[in-house]
Image (cartoon, rainbow, N blue to C red; front, side):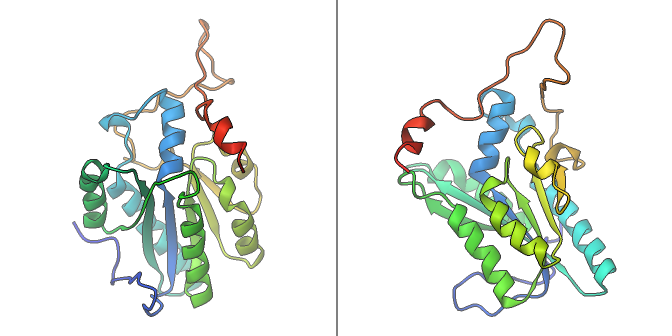
Length: 225
């Protein structure tokens, strides 16, 4: 399997700007939470996203953008994740598989409520923008709300922005005229099995449980902000 990148992107603070790119930032904690809400529990292997399928989709999107702009544009795919204390051995095979496909991974210790990776994702988007190489952005997040201000700034400049997520959680993106919304399940091969999705528009006659989007205990942590 060929790498997602045609050339190597570097991520140290002193690294030179990379080539002009279509950048994917994948918000792993938020997507895991959104997927868990749809499934009503932790995803099994059949319901975990296949990143080789995401990579092929990204390469196709970069190719389309290159054709539209007449520029050489590369796909840059990044995944941002937290590592809980003692959880390195559990997450290591997943991280190594991602890197083997061609994704860069930003991993950060999860020590408290303020150690989320959201600021790091926004910082990387800003970095590529300030370097002048950002030609398009794909934000993969179940709801994408934390990126809305940045997305609005980029679309105002004319940059194409796509939100990858779940339509149940990202109604603001689905309804937006300035961005493209793609449901993760629409990408061929991302999930081995169809997600067991229930919506108010398609309820079975016997009724159905709608799972909470977040644990009730989150109210305690949000009260401190």
